[in-house]
Every structure is written in structure tokens, then in C-alpha cells.
Length: 264
Length: 356
Image (tube, rainbow over all chains, first blue to last red; front, side, top):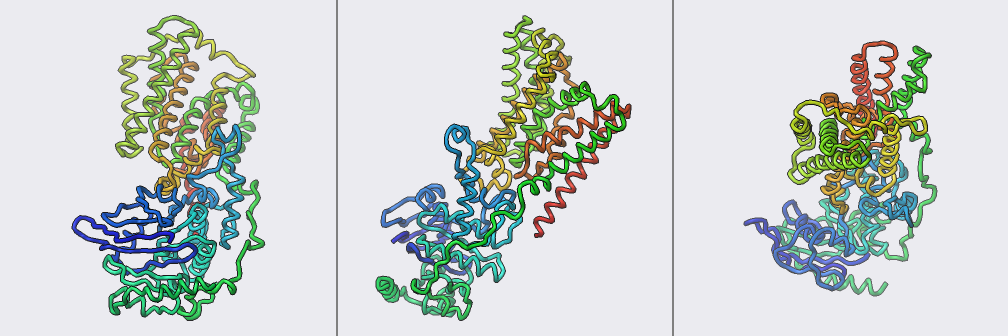
């Protein structure tokens, strides 16, 4: 298992936000995390990406227990997060953004003087944008001049370039139109197909079922369902989110999927 | 890809088996750039301002063909601009990082007074005295820069207020040091530097050129420069990218203070006195020139070459009016108008870009 969380508890003052949540994400799969407002999604993601320490519970990466101390720590372990605000520098170009804080230096003396290797960074950014099939075309334009979907693509490509293992995407399509949403979802799928684990936080259930392999549902600080996307309907998800249907943890279906994967 | 079919959600939601998934590798025909580099450079603010500068030079040369376009007058303009340009290079960094520094004129005066007082106390007219004075001047400027940087980053006081405070404090401290009167006893060794003209230009011009060259290269080609841009463009994202934002920001104010100290020494060399009352508008003149050169007041964008051009516009206007016997006050009016127009044009471009 790529990422596993067991019994995660978190309280802000007297408000208990997470009551012993379990969560799993696997390599090469899109794992959707859904839940109503206040269900604890963002708190859980902050804990899983190192931005917040849990009160109790354990995390493991590659079946080894870890205690994440900061987002930088998580990143050093191959876990990247794309926040909803994207955290891009609008005045700079896509390549500059991809390499922000991780600039490559020229070899030799120039590099020791801190001189940037702009050519290589540009080429590698271009390669990433192309291989991920994004429509980021103009590497000279400032990010501010790109469309919302292109900006999202830059942020995702940046995360994927540096994530060896896992990428958290916080509502990547929330601000996008239909066409750009389609493009970003394609990108999400391609990222997972490249072998990286993707955790997709979303409100949009149609979208989740379109792109995810499995869906984990949070309600009132508990994980109330873990469903394979295949064969699940929007009604099932709404039921789990609102508690209308009390779905038991569907481990049976989970096993079935594992078998399917083994058979491939 | 399942995402594009967009049919029934449930049906499309299933991940397709690998055999049916066409691998979408490198998409052909993605152009790497839509405009050649020279076209982009021409569309930039420094290019516009370079044209404005050339037009100014042409106009003054036509109006005063015997006095304006001469080597001696060119040297005058260069020497006038040199002291301000040294400070403007530092201010370019501060503005690119989204900061602000008003205090340079006062820090210049303080550093000059500190250096002059030290040399006066040491006595002696030789190079040794001058070297100690130079070290003291640079240290004094650096110290004010460090105070600015720490107050802004550690105490979180806005840069405008912090440097407004140090503008008053540094000038007051300089007057306390000198009892309010200019220090006029400058060692002979320093005065002799002022009259030397290696390769026909004064040392002041060469120092300013070196500062601009190094400053321009560091900003445009190094990691330090890139981090400066990233911080100014989006400080939060720079922080998340692992850049030590506070330390970097503080270092920029230290650098700016040190350059103001250097400018103080240059001014002392040029005038052989501390000129305490002559620098009250230096800070604003510097910011004006930097902004004219296309550096954004909102951070994230700016070049030293732009700053060089931007500093020469007020310099040439001033000199041209003097040569034409126009009252020099017109220069202030003209620079004010040019500044507002330049920022307006910049805003228009920004709005058009953001609308696209």
C-alpha cells in the first residue's frame, strides 16, 4: 500500500473534526476523497500532506510508518500537494513556476556562482507539459496570461514532476468551465496511468466517477464508505455522503477489484 | 480516455482496461514559443522607455547642437546619474521582491557623515584613512539596511512605514553626528580620486557601471535573482516552494542599505563635503527611475537594464533643461508627468493581459 492512514483523530479546541479516519491510496490509481462541507476532507488532506499534525493515529508510506513534520518533509518523501489556490507566481512563466525553489544550476564554476541553467529547465518543463498532454503552449507567456485550465495544468505538472509517489489535488476543477475540466481530468487520469498515486478531493460526483478508480467518502469526521468507482452511481455517493443509505465498508467489493487487477 | 467520452457517468467512470487505453505520448506540433525573443524584448517597458530616452536626446541635441551633444556634457550626465543609479540597482531588487525602500537618501547622508567624521577623527590625508572611511561608510549603510530588513521581516511592520521611519531616523542621526553642519574636511587622497578620469570617465561612473552590470546579471541569471522574482510575484507560493522568504527579503534591504552607503561615499568623493540637505528627495527619485524602467510596484517583474534607462530619463531631462536655460523646476514637472503616464501604460497592459 502506497499510503495508509489508520485511526486519525483531530480536534480544533472542543470541536472534534476527525474521529478515527482510515484512508488508503494506491500507486497508479486515482483515489477520490469526497464529503460534504465540514466532513473533514481538508483537515484530513492537511494531515496526510504534512501540513497539520494529527492528535492520534498513524500514517505509513510504502508500509513503513512515518510521522510527517512539515509539507517539506512530505515532499522529500515524494508526496506533493496542489492547493486550490495553485500557488503559482503569476508574473513568471510556466517553466519558472515548475522549477520554483528547485532551480537547476549550470555545471561548473557558473553553477557555483548560482547561475541558472534556464535552457535545461525550459526543456524539461516543455517535456513534462507535452508528455502529460497539456495545452500549455507558450512557455514565454507569464502564467497570468494563461487560461484557468492551463494554470491548473502547470500546477499539476509541477507537482507530478517532483512527486515520486503521490499527488494530492484539492478541487482541481472547482473554478473551471466544462471544456477545461475535461482537459484537467484527462491529465489526472494520465498522471495515475504513469504510476503515480493521485488523491482527488472533489465536490463533483459525476466527475469523481468519471476519473477515479475508487471513492472514499467522509461524513462528520468518519470514513463511511470505500467504493470502487466502477458500478457505483451518483445516488450511491450522495447516499453515503448524507447518510441516507448507510453503506457498510465494502471490503468485499474491494477484494473483488484486487482480484480483477491481479487478473490483468 | 474515459474523461473525454462524457457519456453516462457510471459507465464512463470505470477505468478502461489497459489493452484499450491508447497511450497518449508526446503530442506533436506543440510550438515552443509563439513570438521570437526580439519581438518580446521590443514590447517590454524598458524598450518603450529607451525610445523615449533616445527621443529626448535627439530633441535636446537639435535644440542645443553646440552644448548638449558634447563629450563634456555627456560626462556631466553620467556623473549626475552615477550616484543615484547605484541606489536604484538595489531598489530594483527590493521592488521586484514586492518591497519598498524610501530611506536610501537618508542612509546615504548618514553613511557619508559617518565616513567623513571617522576620517576627520583619524586625521591624515592618505589612502589608509580613506580605506577606513570607506569601510565605515559601507558598514553604516549595511547596518541601516539590516535594521530595515529585520523590522520588516521579524516585526512585520509594512516596508513603507519602516523605511519612512528610518528616513527620518537616519537623517536625524546624521545631523546629531555632525551637529547639523556639513563635514568639509575630506582627505586629499579622496579628492584626488574625484579628479581622475580613467578611460575618460570618472571613477564614479565606472563604479556605477560595475554595480549595474553585476546587479543586472545576478537578477536575470542567478538563483538569488529568481528567488527575488518569485517572492515578489507570490510570497506564499515561494514559501511553499521551500524558499526562505524572510531571510531573502531581509538580505535585499541589507543589500540596499550597503548600496546607499556606497552612494554616500561616492557623493562624498564628488562634492568633498557631506551635502546633508541635498538628498531629501533621493529616495523618491530612485523609485521614480526604477518604475520608469518597467519594474512593477506590485513586485514580480523588473530588470536592471530598465532601471538604467529609467534613471537616465530624469537625468537627461534635467541636464537638457539646464543647457537650454529652461528653469530646472520644469524637470520636476516633466518627470512627474512621465512617471504617471508610464505607470498608466503599464496598468493598461496588465489589465489587457489579465483579461485575456
